[in-house]
Image 1 (cartoon, rainbow, N blue to C red):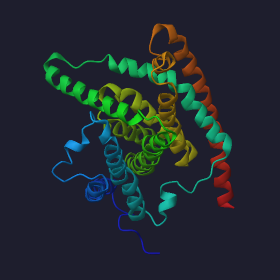
Image 2: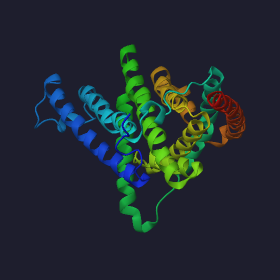
Image 3: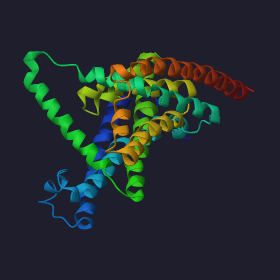
Length: 314
């Protein structure tokens, strides 16, 4: 089999090429989105931008469609292309051919569920952070951007039918879980691991980028910690489907919680769980149990991967 074009390239070259893949893929999918959305949603090119106004509930279908197109172009397709030009075995490069036993997935699910109060707590800490006075104007712009993002999320999640819930689970939970994990853990983490020769540095750098691309300053810390968690789950299990599953559970729980409990007191309590003094013991509980599950996950995957390695040697 002929060597892929960038298999022997320096990690920086791979990183640069990945960047161009993302830009090119995004532009191609954007054109596809425009061409298909205009007749499908009955709008004109001149009115396309105004049709993306989130304050009009009639536009939410177009917004969700363009979100789907954007995610495919930025997160799903580029890592697949990168895997084909970086390795003879693209599926193995992405660690998409590794099989893990059910207890591995069960422990991984337990980690993210028990970690929720602690993640909420770090989110509350992050929200209290402020920039120096000299950056007051910039901070106001950040707040305006995040308020707009919050409205977008609210508009996305506000559905009344099972069909709407199913679409949200695909766009908000499944697609990001697959695309973002393939890109940040499947490709970027491996590039930085090859570059730095240090898996911990690679995990943290990819987690930083994972959080940064969401452009939410007041949600940076919890998203960074989630990215680091996904990175360690990936490195220890050597299976991309483990962080994909955990990422899906994390996003999917938010979608389900909103659908079934929105506008109730229970929803507000769940959303604030771990952020106030009344629920502070839950943060300690969260750290202890998530840490225990994480340790068990590490030990189990260590046994599992060493068994697979010994079988391959034979």
